[in-house]
Image (cartoon, rainbow, N blue to C red; front, side, top):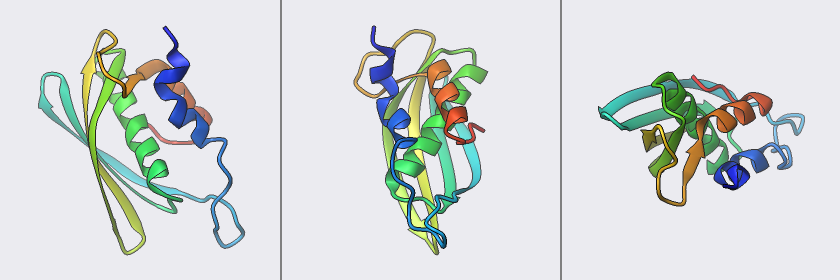
Amino acid sequence: MNHAALISPLLLLGCTEAPTGAQGVFLPEYQGVETRLLDTDLVQIRVQMTGARDRRDVTAYATCAAAQYALIRGYGFARHLRTNFDEKGGVSGADAVYTVSPTLPAGLKTIDAEVTVAACKNNGIPTV
């Protein structure tokens, strides 16, 4: 199994160019994670941040939170189901839903929780 393919968009996030900030530096402010268990294996993750370059930054934040949530619940994997985005007054948000499971779920948008949390830490993205 190719674990790198599971989270390649997240890993590539750290390789993108810095956005246009006051000094041209990426200075995100991660403003918290809200989790809500919808069913035994279904979780809703809401995140907000400022300084996002685009939706990929907000998605990465939600993915990091989902991966950590899976680990906290004793699961090794998650699968992305959907994400809704919003932006108001410079605050970018995402409302995402994931399944969590002890084994690799079927589907294209699977997340190896351990590998993803490590990548999040390396990229300075909080997981909870």
